[in-house]
Every structure is written in structure tokens, then in C-alpha cells.
Image 1 (spheres, rainbow, N blue to C red):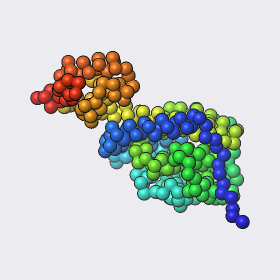
Image 2 (cartoon, rainbow, N blue to C red):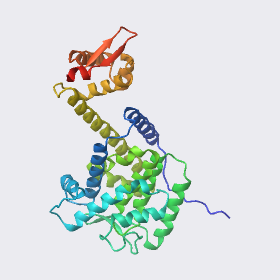
Image 3 (tube, rainbow, N blue to C red):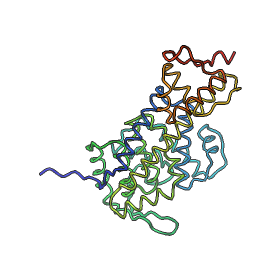
Image 4 (cartoon, rainbow, N blue to C red):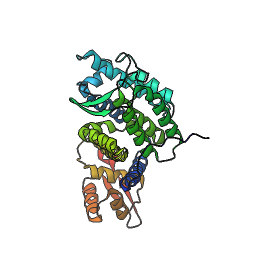
Length: 340
């Protein structure tokens, strides 16, 4: 008789379907706008912010500036344990592309790196029973230690066999991982890290999104939905929360890229012209398609044609944009002329 594979309890709600669609569409726009991936500066900045946020959730008190200095090899005054946490986290995130999210042994290897010198059982499932505390209150009692290897094996078997969308699968895995709480310490960090790994296999860009920062800024809600999912014995509330965080992180990254593009454009024109984020977005679209219509610009920027026309007039007045020909003509971005 064939053993029935374990399936974690979750429901694909209307909100989850909507989020899958919106995240996929937004990622599609981002990849078209930035086909060469994020800039190295933004990738590194997002990674450092991710590490800072993930450790801050676990009560690490070092600032982002201190963590950046540690990663750069500089000496920083701080608790040895917190400094080691930063070094370990950066090491394991640098290995993201080398790990297979479907292999349990890779999970153990990642935990070994993440918790090196911090716990005795680094790289091994816990040998004792644990609970999750919020202050002095126990908010979650994890399954007995003897059940952990079985439960983790079942969870990885499900992840290998499931055909649900990676956004949903990674979020369900994240919740189930936190429920099992397989390690003596580092479960929060590992759960968030493994979801990032799963998502990065679907879309490499997701390896650099600052999702951890969004979670940290909504930490109370993060723990609340974990508890709600526990009570319902269904991960749906947690899945919805995490997917909202992913969407917010994508929008944050788009805004950061636009700001950086604006800085580059400002440099090209001597820093003398002030551009709004909306105008930067319009210029970017025009550079990619000089024959783009006002109507299509309005659709892509999500404002009406009257507002688009005002931005176009402003850009023309600043000498950045020029119209060549009539209705069948094209736009010309005049950056080189302005910089001379």
C-alpha cells in the first residue's frame, strides 16, 4: 500500500489568488523595466537591510551602519554574540545561490552556518522540547523533539511534490517550519531565509528583496497571524500576510530603483534639474519606446492623460524631452544636450 503524502492544511482564498496575480504582474513590470537585474549597490543594500531586519526581529541591537561595518571587515564595538550573528548571517546569505530548497541536508548546512559558535546543536535538529515566548507568555508549544525528523521529512516531501504556485508553497512551508520549530535556536531566521531561497529559485530577483524589513516593521502582525494560523490549524492567514509583505517589498524596491535612476539622470544633466519619481518613470518608458502614446503612458503610469500631458509639458520646458514630428512622430530624450 502506497503511503499517503502529508499535505499541510491551507486554503487558497480569493485574497491569495489576487496577491499571486498582482505580485506576478508587478514582478513582470520590474523585470521589463530593469532587465539587467537590480544594480549591485541596490542588491548589496537590500541584502544588508534584510540581515539587519532579520536579526533585529530576534533582538539583535546592532544598527544597520554597525552591521555594514562588520561586513566590510571593520572593527565595531558591540556584544560578541551579536557581532557573530551578523557574520554568520552574511555568510549564509552569500551561499543562497548554492543551496537547493528541496534538500533537507542543505537546510541543516545553512543552519550550521547561521548558528556557528552560537548554539551547541548548530546544523542538527533539536534534542529537547521548546516553546515560543512573547515576554513571559508562552504563545506556541512546538511538537516533541522526537517528532521533528519525521515532520521535517514530511514537509520536504510535500514541497518536492506540490504543484501549487511558489508564492503559496514558500509561504506554507514558512508557516509549517515555524510550527515545527525544528532547531533549538534560529528558527525565525531560518524560516524566513528558506522562504527567500524557495522564491529565488522561481524568480532570482526575489533573493534581494527586503521582505525581512517589511516583516520587522509589522512584527506584531507577524506574530499575531502565526498565532491565528495555529488556532485555526490552517496557514492561510499567515500566507496572506507574507504575500502582502512580498508585494510591499517589491514596491519598495521599485521606488528605490527609481530614486537611483533619478540620481543618475541628475548626474547626467549636471544635477541642475529637479525630477519627480513620476517624471523619471515616464522618461524611462519613453526611452524604451520613443513612439509610446500618451494613452499608453497614462495606462502604464496609472494616471489620467491630462496628468501625463502636464508631466510631458514640464519635461519639455526643462529641455529634457523633445517631440519629433506630429501624431506619427516620436519622443527624444535630450539628456546629452543638457549636460553640455
